[in-house]
Amino acid sequence: MRKEIQDYLDSAPDIKFFVRMNPDWYRRLSRYPGDIIYLKQAADDFYGRTFGKRMDRLNERAGFLSMLLGLAEAMNEVSEEKKDADKKKKKG
Image (cartoon, rainbow, N blue to C red; front, side, top):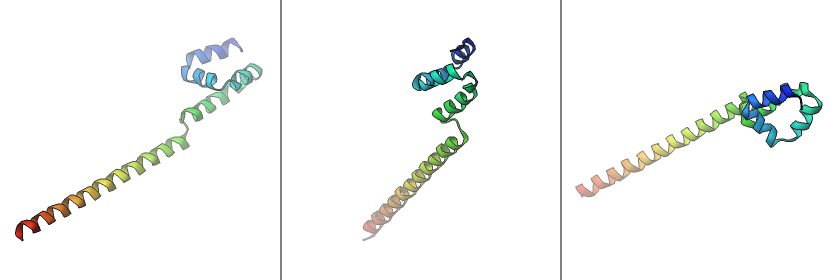
């Protein structure tokens, strides 16, 4: 592998880790050093740094928050029903 590619990998530890996890990139960069531009794209996809993956995470979080709000509302309704039942017992 070329020295400049090794220096680039040393300066970007996350991309270096990606290359270690995907050894086919060692071969690819040794044979085609110009593919380094595709390496960053592949690493971003691996780490979930692409726009699509970020949107997916945002949608998952929004769904989770919606579920939590629904749970809180349901618990509030149960609490109110229990209070109403307690009031009726005290009157009767």
